[in-house]
Image 1: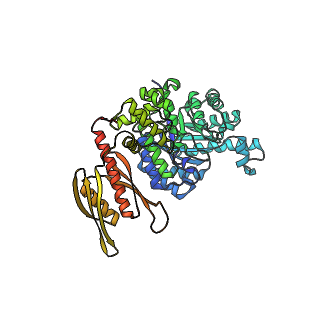
Image 2 (image 1 turned 135 degrees about the vertical axis):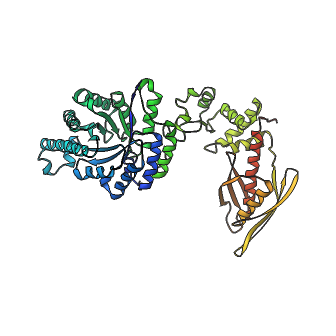
Image 3 (image 1 turned 90 degrees about the vertical axis):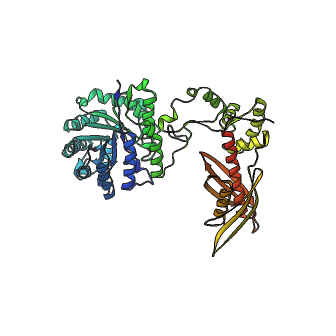
Length: 522
């Protein structure tokens, strides 16, 4: 059996302090519910004394969320601690997180007033007493008290040891060792945690927690160094959001511990399959986009593009993947077709689309593929269909527009009539809609008897003037397939009809390919 590392999520408190973000009470509750599904051990819901809205948010989460401990932050001042106690009154497992600056830089910078002492030594005595008093007051409201020694990474080791021993003696159950400014190096920070375990006499009565910031990009590395040296609680945020460059990314810490259990010899109780969903929810709630190259949850985290990588991945997944995408809630790995993708990647994608090609046909298609790939960031399935159609075997157009008439006006019901050639048969139909385009699409759907969903519609002018050529682009979805249809005409309604029919023909081609492997012969 391995030891458990508790996961302390501070997305709703430290994460929400990221510049330009703000969550209301209901939004915080929505995120908290997802964090419960993720099975985090502690949710730091907010800082109650900072504003009435934050007080309300902590109170709401404390009342509604069952399972994780609900934590509220305070400074080492009575008014803050009392606000935490009131906000957490209905929590099943309440925790107050209180603390104070411990480094000389923080003490001299934040406590300049002479009421804290006339010099550094006098101020240190005062700060130490404030820390003890804060923990004792917090214990009057809750049994579970966490103490943070702010800027511990730059603190005088002897003073830090003295402070931690005193607050544990006062009743702190968790001692948080923040690298507040992201200043320390992993070996340094790991050594700090080891020193605390060795030199704080009563450390066995408290859990050591790590809370690291990412100013130098080392928050996750420092947190893991802390775990290696005995910390048994990790703090961080989803997607690594937070003050300045952010906090340690919880999904990265969790998956590092899980993937390298042989190295860390510890575990978490996180439901990792909820990581991707949680990441996207937080991203949408705070309006902070997840970078595509973000570890674990980025859109490229399980994507392969280089020919050597694609070939190796297709032969044996573990050659280039140390985690399975489904382990974090992503459906599957993705081969991204680009100019760097080799023939193996192209053949694999064609096979998945239902096409079997000879080596000669693959070589011919690959040359056209490279031409297309040089002009685009990514080659999509519809591009491959076009390559097959143009280079190997023309794919028949199932639907051809023969006639279109529409009627619309400010006092008329928009109506459209169409005549289509469907294979060898001519069909006619009519439809009414919210406008001439909608009416036309309903008429086409009636004639083709398809159930494709229109996901996107765009129109742009190709040329200038009142007789400008208009190009319409539509995205259609059916049975999990997405295609883009295009049409151009000086009449935007006709262009719209052409684009819709182009998309339907592509969906029909997919449908034919999906029925089984299709031999493509020249």
